[in-house]
Amino acid sequence: MAMMGGVELTAPGCRRSQPLQIKPTLAGAEGAASGAAEAPQPAAAAEKLTEIPPVPPVNYGVIGAGAWGRKIITTLTLLKNDSQFKNTGVVAVCDHFPSWLNRAGDLAPKAEKFDDYKKLLAKPEVQAVVVATPTHQHRDIVLDALKAGKHVYCEAPLANSIPDAKDIARAAQKAFKQVFQPGLQERSHPHRHFLWPFIRTGALGRNVLVRAQWHKKGSWAKTASTPERAAELNWRLRQATSTGLMGEACIHRLDAVTWFMGGAQLGGRPSAITGFSSLILWNDGRDVPDTVQCVFEFPDGPNAGVRFLCDATLCNSFDSEYEMYYGTESAILMQPGDESRESKAWMFKEVDATPLGWEIYARKDSFGAETGVSLVANASKQAALAPGAAAANAAPLVEPLQYALQSFTANAGAVSAAVKDYEELFGDADTPEYRAKLAEARKYSFSQFPAAGWEEGLEATVLAIKANEAALLKQRLELKSEFFEL
Image 1 (cartoon, rainbow, N blue to C red):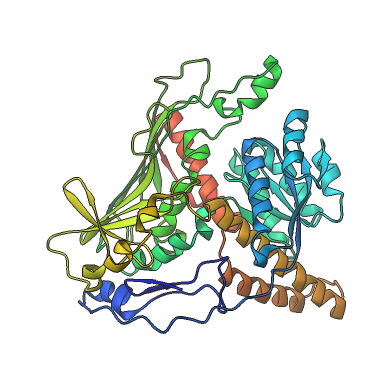
Image 2: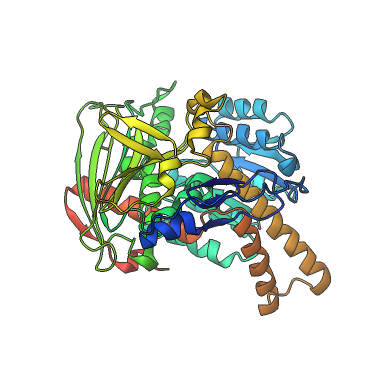
């Protein structure tokens, strides 16, 4: 268990005797909301951590063995080192490019290799599939996988067109015996669930402005032995197949910001986008811009008047990737985690902000002339001075992708077990009672292992597609509610 500022967290995948608990307490979030300057409450006695049984077995097939597909295979293999996920296994891999298929096979020596995903889906021992192909190829694979009764983890964006994304969402909605999870990793990250109640209980004051960026210098261009293969590999550089920088790079920022702003139910879905784009450095025949800026407007409600500015470039790497939330009481910087750094966040208070009380005990970090209050678990002065504190900037013990795949594995296993238990007792007829039982099992499992579903996947995909469209057209586009409806 971790505690900071009165927010309590048990992270998914750790040894715990209770489900994931995310709740503000008086000293932290409630104090922030009310403006009361509460003194930090003493930590409760350490929870007795117990060894918990492994999640039900899940056998994976991975479709798409490029660099990211191989990263997924490696991560799934690492899950077996955790006793909670020791029954996870990659039993099949698929790619039509022989050298990639062989490299994937080296990572999972016991996995059967296929050059046709339909042959992989025909294998009854494959319970779940990860779709790691190019975005424009997702639709048919996902629909076939769901039809074959497989649980599906589909990389984000769901598709490169809104109709295709809606087809995927409809199929996932109907597949009540299966788990569908889009690759929005931060929906499973414990640090994001640590921060969400903190943001939503008023520590910022009134929302004013949000900025996010993705900066990474690189061409995205790939070379190949034949022109045909080069064209296939460089799908991101063509408007016909790519969602551009907004979709292929910034979709996690779009999802995170709209989530933290309240989502569609609480005024966090943008109502319009104005886009700008340029091709500045990588003028090599591509028709996808290498630099993009988008300004998102919000509807009347709690975020009325707020603008969300998101920019991305392949021409410069400075400042990398982050989100910045500005409020009347404070600003909060969120640095997402990746394979080389932990997820972190800092609060920068206004001089006239109401004292929260707990922040005087938290660790402080300097940013030029500014001082940020560290918003991480156990971010106290004592923790900062403890032996090993210098390792805070080391590579994370658990990467964001692993958190997402842990959630998918646990939830797919739990739903499969619930299906088996019910059908052994009552048969496989689709009845209201059957759906209610599975919904109950699903709700409990997702409370322990949170993850995005088809709704979040569709929402983020539509935002990314329309943002890319606005950037290409260099126009302001209204976001109609029908874009998000099935």
